[in-house]
Image (cartoon, one colour):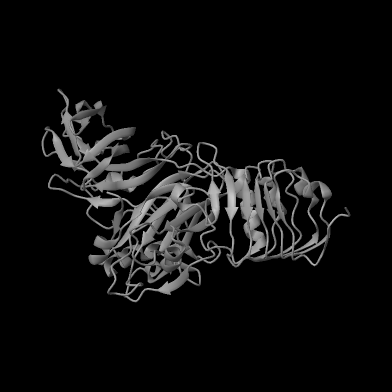
Amino acid sequence: MSHLRLILLSAAVFSLVSSTLSQPSPPSAILIDCGASVSSVINGRRWQPDEAFISTGTSRNVSEQVLDQVLSTVRSFPLNNNLLLGRRSKFCYAVAVSRGWKYMVRTTYFYGGVNGKANPPPVFDQIVDGTLWGVVNTTADYADGLASYYEGVFLAQGKSLTVCVASNSYTASDPFISALEVVRLDGTVYNSTDFRGYGLSLVARHAFGHSGPLIRFPDDEFDRFWEPYSINSTVPNNRKLEVSGFWNLPPSRIFNTDLRATQVQPLEFTWPPLPLKNSVYYIALYFAHDSDSLPGGGGSSRVFDVSVNGVTYYRELSVTPAGAVIFASRWPLEGLTTLTLSPRSGSTLAPLINGGEMFEVIALGGRTLVRDATALNAIKGSFENVPVDWNGDPCMPKNYSWTGVTCSEGPRIRIVALNLTSMGLSGSLAPEVARLTALSSIWLGNNSLSGSIPDMGSLKLLESVHLEDNRFSGTFPSFFSGVPRLRELFLQNNNLTGQVPSNLLQKPGLYLRTSGNPFLTQPPR
């Protein structure tokens, strides 16, 4: 199951949440109402318009009536441009974060017919930094009048975190997004995962025995969604337990209901309710009971084994009023999953369970070397009319590198070539180009770039430079004489002045073109 369904709010839900409007927003939460033009407070949480976080796409109103205000607008991204370029393009939100902290990222999608009611919702990818998070497919949910949400947990590896939607080979119309939430998590939450190499993508999070609306903020301080899950063996205990010590910090409200066997016998049920793809999963299960309801006083006990698809997950779990959590950080699963709680010999109380979370463990993609990414972003800032997909990680995921950017393979990802010939660029070339020390070629010909050519003498791997047919000015760049591998230097049709260095003219194997610079002179013979 790649995503979760989000039921549109009904009038009954509004009456429930109206009392929370005075509550503060979750800590360190950035809530982005995609496509909105003004901020708003919805259910006690402040949402921001998205223009400060993204520089591309179009704000559009959903034509269908919705009860959740956040779903009334989307930001839509141009598929046609991608097709013309013959490539996949990503469109990224950049959110300032605290490096080294874990963040919950939630994306919400409600199509609302923005590409025309006759067109089904587009299917596309979503990306976090350089990692392909998964495929967004809202078709089934939209047919049922529902929005879809996707949630993951990722480590902030820099001062910003990028969340992107991206066209893929089967995207048929413009990708879109309705909302984006980035919430900083407490350091203990999901801390058994090595977030330097992996992220978590939510598969299921349920409050067992609960049959009402989502349990979320303010019950859950991070506004995680705990969906209802009831079966015939549901026995609500309707008591408020004061549990503590759970490092994942589940809301205490999930312990007010449970699933339990009606007698001291095994409790078996399917969870999650949909089949899983073949992968590795993080599983956390939560248990507690109310001491006031225990028959027979202190001699009663609730001890059982937990198995997943017949494989022992935990032996002799003793549930107390203080509560217990058991987890596995990497558990292989595929297809439908069955949980079985089997009482141990001597246990006097039926097994029960209050809540569960399951995430797919996803390997992180690589990241462009920070120095290269920083330098290229500086170049982006000096250009005008840059390609629309120049956002997010320049090289990763592999199929989503920036237009005109070629990257190296392997664990240390470097930018090795720039080719933006005839891209309609204007502005200037930033001096930070000298920090792209893995460059072998830079082709910026037939644009409208101006200003001086920055010193590239540090680019010792540079072999080919095309800056022709621009508006570069200033004295002829003599530093090219010291670039050892240079074999091709095209500077014709600019406004360079001064004299072409004789050692450059005499450089063995160099193909040099300088014509069309009216104020440039050749050295005396």
